Image 1 (spheres, rainbow, N blue to C red):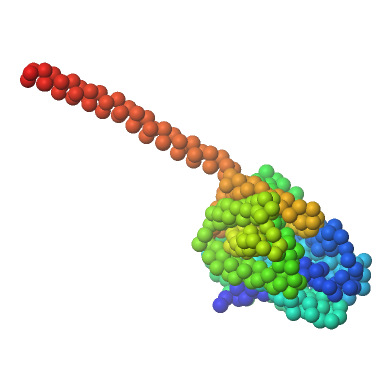
Image 2: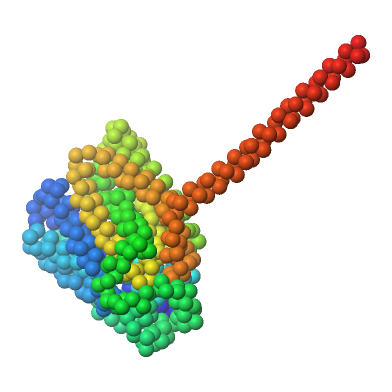
Length: 507
C-alpha cells in the first residue's frame, strides 16, 4: 500500500476525535453523575453546554485556511490537535460549569483548526482516481468515533464516582496529544510546497508519499494559469486567499460550499446524535441504559452504513447521491413529525413509537450513505487550487455555526413541541435538495485543477437549457403526430365513402 494512503489514514483520525466528542457529550450530560457534579439545568443551559464547542470552532475555522497556507497543512492539524487536548483536559478536570464550558470552547478552537484542513491535505496528496474513497476516510472515522463515544459512556455510566463522566474526556485528551505529536513526522503536501515556492522539497515529498511525478506534473499543466495565479505580485501572501475566495471566478464554488456544509446540520443529524438519549426517551425508551444502548446502536448503524458509501463514493456521483439523500431524509423527518403532530406516539403502547425509532435509524443510514460522505469531499474538490484551503475553512465555519444553532435550539424544541424540530429539519432538507438539483455540477473522477471549470456556467442555466431542448424535441414529435392524424382520418373517410358508393351500385 502506498505511503500517501497511510498518511491519509493517520490524519483522518482527527475526524475520530470529532466523532468521539459528538458521541459522548449527549450521554455525559444525561448521566446521574454529571448532575451530581453540576446540578440540574434547564433545556436552554443543556443546549449551551453541548453547543459551546461549536462557535469557537466556527470562529477559528474561518482563519484555519490562512494558518494552513502559512505554516502548512500538517502543522495546522498538529496545532489544532494540541489545543484540543488542552481543552479536553480542562473538561475532564472541571469542578464547575464555569470550568467545563471554557474547556469545551478551547477544544472547539482546536477542532476549528484541524478539521477543515485534514480533507484539504488528503485531496492534495491523492491521485484523482483514488481521491474519493480515501478522502471519505475522515467521515468514516468520524462515524467510528460516534459509537465509540456512546459505548465508552455506556460502560462508564455505572462507575460510582465522577469518573463516570470524566473518563471519556481523559481518553479524548490522550488521543489528541498523540495525534498532535505524530502529524509533524508525515510528508508535506507537494502542492502546498509548490505554492509556497519550496520547489526543492517537492521531489523528496513525492518520494516519501510514493506518488507518480509524471502524473502530478500533467495535473499541474492541465490547470493552466488557474492553478495558482502565481503571476500575481501577492500570490504567496496567504492573507490574500480570503479575498480571492470572493473573486468572480471563485465565489460560486465558495458560496455553494458554505451553503452545503451549513445545510448538512439543518438536516437534523446532530440533533439526533447529540441528544439521542433524549430523542429515544421521547419515543418511549424510558430507562437510562435503554436510551444509551439505543444511542450506541445509532452510532453503529452510522458507521456500518458509511463503510460501503466511502469505498463506493467514486461509483456513485456526488450529485446523484445528494439528491437521493434529500428525498429519503426529508421523507423520514416529515414522517416522524407527522406521527408526533397527530398524537399517534405513546410512551408505553402502540406501534407508532416503534415506527419513530425505526425511522430514526433509516434517517441516519440515508445521511451516512449520501450527504455525510459526499458533501465534505465535494466542498473541497470544487474549490480552485489557489483558494482551496481558505474556501474549505469558510465552509467548515458555516458548518460549525449551523451546528451551534441546531445544538442550541433542539432541546428547547423538544421540550416545547414534540414535532416542531422534525418539521423544521424536513423542510430544510427539501430546500437543500432543490439547491443541489439546480446548482451542483458533478465532480466525480475529475482532476482538482479542472473541476472549477464546471462553474464557468451556472448549472441551473444548463438544466433549463437541457429542459428547453427536451421540450422542443417533444414539441416537434407532437407536431409530427398531429400532422399525420388528419391524413389518416381523411383516408379512412374516403374509404368509407367508396364502400357506400359500391353498395349503392350493387343494389
